[in-house]
Image (cartoon, rainbow, N blue to C red; front, side, top):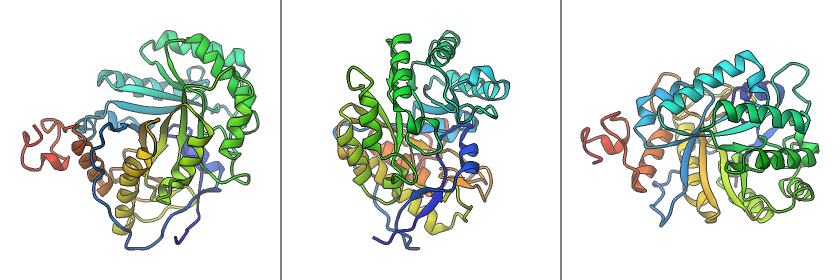
Length: 353
């Protein structure tokens, strides 16, 4: 396979995502670079398919009829662990949550490093972390799905060298909300040790500090996905025994190192990667239960990070149509009365049933 090392930053679907892009340039995503990228048909309907969600810290998608028509009911946001203590991220997040709640969407919330200058590389005490989580639960009792910490093994995260602290956070979340679904951690499939602690190594150290293996784990598998390669995901499946959610993944156009034009070949390649994610990659194991694609829309035609389903001009990209086709093939019919954008709606507003 021809390999292109794409320099990028940590890929959190959050307000912290731009910060990570600004901080780093060493996230390596590898993949074929042919201008005539192969295409593949929509993933066939499996006997039981993964649940598909969408991650984006922006709010536009939550009111976009083209998203609402797809029948996706799970969404993800990544927030600073101290989001409630800071006015700007709190206001942005509360708007996001309010829109998600209004549309009856189920949010997955990933906690991340603080956005406060001077605290970005500091980990809170377990008591601090627990206190703000309990405040979060009291304010938003309908939110019950959480990732303890985002991309814990990435070299820019303060958690990369402290699995013990993350284990303590995880146990605190389990104690503070026994009925919640808690992903022990979210790992990034970057090559180590230059860019991240190897996933299996980080997991082994984490496991030394918990009484039993967690039931749920998160994986951000951009590297394997964009290389059309199952190796990193298989490696993660060998490292853990719990259920796995792809908390963030997608076909990538621009990757944080520098913006590139969304040419026709790159857009087709993006769609091919998304088909691969929802087909062969998600089908590797029945333990893989969810896939959250990142992100909904590009903000400009030169975004530093771009894995969007909708272009900055507002036009759906091939990846959007690929996703819509896959969902329809699985029996998740679009609501054509909301939007006729999904291909299944092409024959008219009632075409999809």
